[in-house]
Image (cartoon, rainbow, N blue to C red):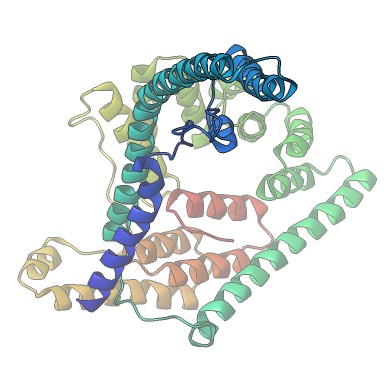
Length: 423
């Protein structure tokens, strides 16, 4: 409780310090409130006033006249009575000018206050909003009871992040070396169709789709325009165009759709093109047909199903009963397992789920050549909130399938889809 009192006091002090200059009245210099011994305005009053130049000139003339009267008396030009009458007239004019100065300053102050008042309110509003927003943000995110986390206590965390970064850098270096080796081999043997495919997949995994286009175009030409290679080429066109389906990509996809290829990228990107053209219903139809005919353990299936549900929700399209994704053949809970799980405590259910995930991990250790299994393991760990374990599974899969850039690219795509930060 003490910390809240201290923070509240500091906030109020800061608010007062900021708002005080806004609300306090600005001091104004006094206009000549008294005359000097000779009836003229005091110098300080003349400096503090803000009259027109004409009034200032009049005051200067009147002061000169007073001095001239004194000199005329000394020279005997004026008598005492004449000098007194002249001095009274000049002082009357000075008082009149001084009155005009006060009136003008009063008008100027009134105008300044009328302009300053809205500005003060706006400034005060912004400051108050800023302070209130800061308090609200702290109440939402802040936690004064959270213990300190010095660097010394985060050694393992920092080391794990450094190792993950090193692994990722090693993977990138390995892919770059593979690209260089493949490029040299293809210069010597340009008819190596598999080499062109690996080169394109490696370049895609490195995030260089513009260069991958050249490699995939070679596969299209040398394979007699095979549908699978057309799909790969189309994907490189889409990726290099920031996900937009342009005329070139659309033409390649339509050509691929007329072949016997079952590559899922064909129908997915054709549907994406329909959606970008505003025909979301046609896109959903394509994607539903694609999902319903896909293996349940396809690593790209969750992404497609998510797209379908999102598009249907936004467009208000009813897909009830249309999406019939087949159940995964992989080992999982049956009806009896589910019924038993409903009677378990939360701790027992968590233990059962963990045993299933651990069983999958053990099977993959014994039989690692199972890309679908590694994909399921990554997803399972992310569902359980174990991002470090999901990252470890991702990196292990990359090591196992290092010689298959197409699989590496798909693992990277899955990692992005499930929100796994691989960097």
